[in-house]
Amino acid sequence: MVPQGWIPHRREDGELVGWIRPEGDDWVAVSLLGRDVSGAVGWVEAEEVLDELGLRWLAEIWTLERPGQDPLRVRIVDVRPGRVVVQTDDFGAVDAVVERVELGWPAPAELRPRRPDDPVAFGAA
Image (cartoon, rainbow, N blue to C red; front, side, top):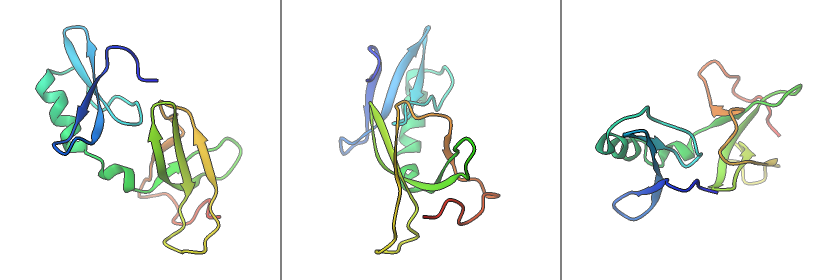
């Protein structure tokens, strides 16, 4: 669950884009994954970081590293305090078999944005 003292930050349309948490006399912007996305900054700067980040990153390709296994190319399908659910990328195919993985929240470091040097189809189902 969201720690006490974290303040929700919403877009103009009311959609939650993250939280702002206290850090001494400053504030830290926190993404929906529960990860810090700024250092200790002023309140307005923390808001600006979350506004700039928005929600578009949720639609991007991610990589799920797995010990002793090939990494999975995944998309985030659900994120909320308590859990993050990813599924293997179906490459737009309607009939693709996908694997869903439920992760904890905040999201573990094993879930990371895709890097340009990642193979295109690793972990494809």
